[in-house]
Length: 92
Image 1: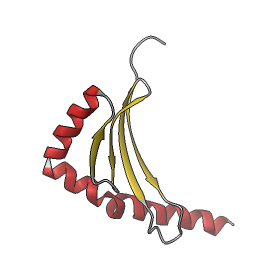
Image 2 (image 1 turned 60 degrees about the vertical axis):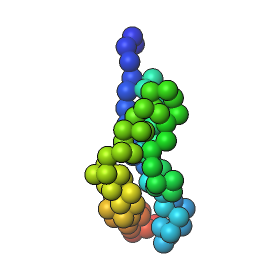
Image 3 (image 1 turned 30 degrees about the vertical axis):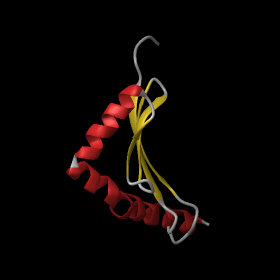
Image 4 (image 1 turned 120 degrees about the vertical axis):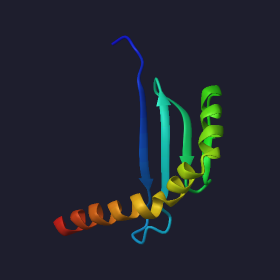
């Protein structure tokens, strides 16, 4: 039980069937504290800790990372939501 716990999490959050309100979140956490998070509505990484602010500055400078994250609603979220939603609807 001793040690450190570091993880990343990507989430697609939405509440409408046409996905018009879909938001992509990409968070980096350390010991259950979110250090930095990308939010597709904001369009950039935001740091929530001293270390996270440094990460956000570096991520936001990297155009390749930013282009990928900004496109994630269309390239990652929407296609996966369509597959998962249709499988749930087909079972009802």
